[in-house]
Image (cartoon, rainbow, N blue to C red; front, side):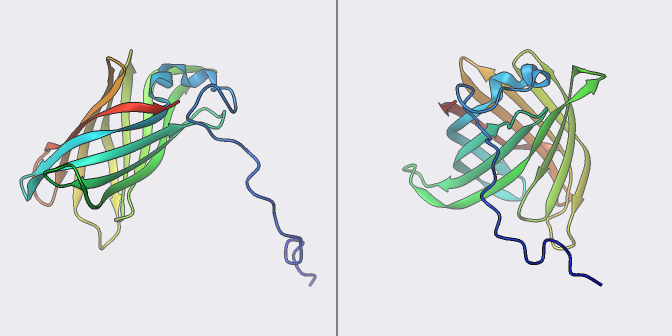
Length: 191
């Protein structure tokens, strides 16, 4: 049996395709994403969080929403806790995922599917709708590892208001019903 052709092949060059959150450079935005166009960019800001099982907290966050020319957006969020004087305390929540419009043949509908994953072992499938500059998502399914926190449902509302990205997130977890968890205002710093 001969060895596979890749076994002794030369090293591979870096990933050759560009991804961008700046619509002035890189690949053209796929036409199916025009309804999500206002969200593409690099955003930073502050928020407030809480839950019945934890004390309220202040945080900063950076969200990058980018594309590579195909009909979906890449979503990456990282947050860090802030003290009373807005100094960083420690890293907080992170998630990565993809937003994509539901297609009807070659035409994008106003329906959206979003897959979001955390490093703490939680994966959420959201479905929703984009209306103008408002995007509302609800969980369709939550999958988690055996060691992850019990999360059973979520609801997220995003909007572009006076050029800023605002969002509110509700969560049902650890025996609690769906209640407010996070809200923030982020400004565009890139794109």
